Image 1 (cartoon, helix red, strand yellow):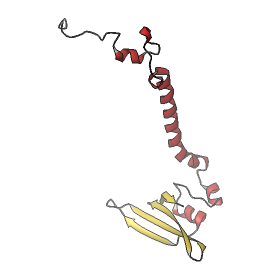
Image 2 (image 1 turned 120 degrees about the horizontal axis):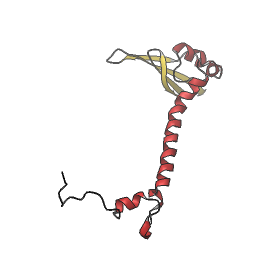
Image 3 (image 1 turned 180 degrees about the vertical axis):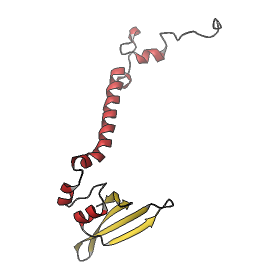
Image 4 (image 1 turned 45 degrees about the vertical axis):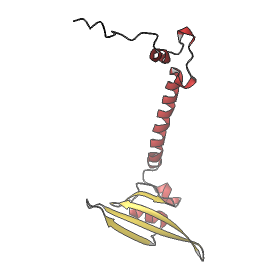
Length: 138
């Protein structure tokens, strides 16, 4: 079956779309630097590598110290610790707020108070879900 004569069967090679895909356009047309194929590939590789690095950065400390012993010795907490490990690292909290989600997940907020001077207090927070540390702020 032949296509109708009014419809083009292929795109002409001199269209602007094809010219932008080539690194070295023939007819003297210049492509802007960011639109060159080699630049786009380099940029995509860099951004992909950066994204993988950022994702791995959160998991890297857990892989290097799976039992958190070094973090506990340094008085530091990290996501994935249990309540007992957090108490070993930072001690007992000043206040514990416990809530439950609609699905019955137990969430705890631990508040630590560090007295800098008589009228100045610094607060630190730890957040647990089902006994595992999921986040916090210093």
